[in-house]
Length: 128
Image (tube, rainbow, N blue to C red; front, side, top):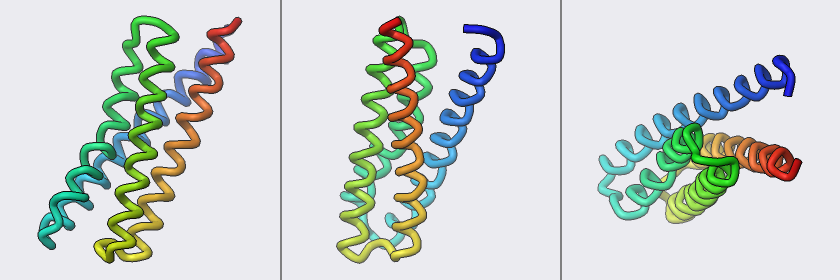
């Protein structure tokens, strides 16, 4: 991998890291609003899975191997999928407005796409 490819790869990693942190902040804010309305069960699950995405991406930075890196990203992907479920359930049980639901699921879907792309790229480099 040449210097330009390495630089581009690091920029993508940093973008994913930053985007997941911003998503976590949004999820914490949403949880606080839901807790004010006395919704604790589903929102707590959403909080746990939604903030786990960024934590797992951070863990992946110091993975012991490429396979460990891929595994941590897969777990982050599973957490993002679970977060989508909780957002959808909160929406369909009238705890979230259409606007709030779409805003958060759009950001979550962007993270999912980025994780899928990162996993795919990492798997290709693993097999070389």
